[in-house]
Every structure is written in structure tokens, then in C-alpha cells.
Picture 1 (cartoon, rainbow, N blue to C red):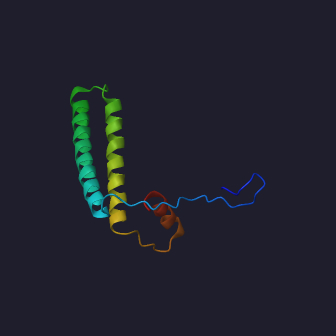
Picture 2 (cartoon, rainbow, N blue to C red):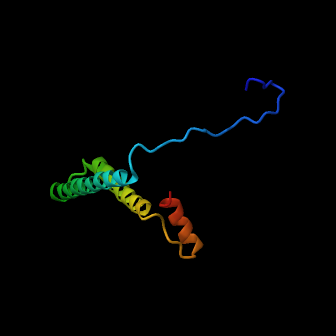
Picture 3 (cartoon, rainbow, N blue to C red):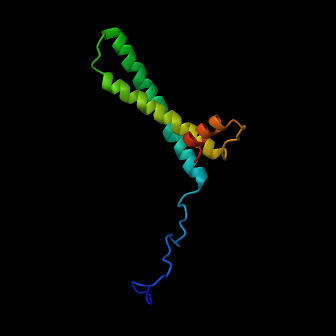
Length: 110
């Protein structure tokens, strides 16, 4: 912008010209993702099972917040695992139904 003035019609670039390189290969990222999400699924399932069993045995609703958080975490881990599987398998094959394809594209496709 050395020669540009306030009245100039010079086009200012809106994109970065720097290329970003991924520091790790995608296979390493996928492996770490599977490990972390697998441990998260197992841990949240165990916590949820213990809390539900304690609720049945002791008839206490004290741990409702923890139970709800565990359910949310478990759902998030399962959704992350599904997303990671779709990313590793290089996408989703569309079957022609616009509603189902659109819903899968919005929720899973990256």
C-alpha cells in the first residue's frame, strides 16, 4: 500500500498468502483422537453406571447434576467418535434423499 491513497481503488487482498503446514500427520491425529475419545466413552459410561446404581440403591437425587454432565460428556464422546470415523473414511456416500443427506452433512460432514 505504498502508492495507495484514501481515494485509490486498489484492491486490498482479503486472504492470507501464508501456507499453513500441519505439524503432525493426519494418521497420528486420528490415532490420538480414537484413543482419547475411547477413554472418554469408557470413563463416562462407568461414571454414569455408578451414579445410576447409587441412585437406585440409596434413593438419592443429590447427584443429578453430575449424572446429567456425564450423559452430556458421553454423548459428546460418541458424536466425536462418529465424526472421526467419517473423517478417516473420507466422507459419506450420499443416497439421494435430500433431507437425510442434508442432516448428515450438517451434523457429521466437515
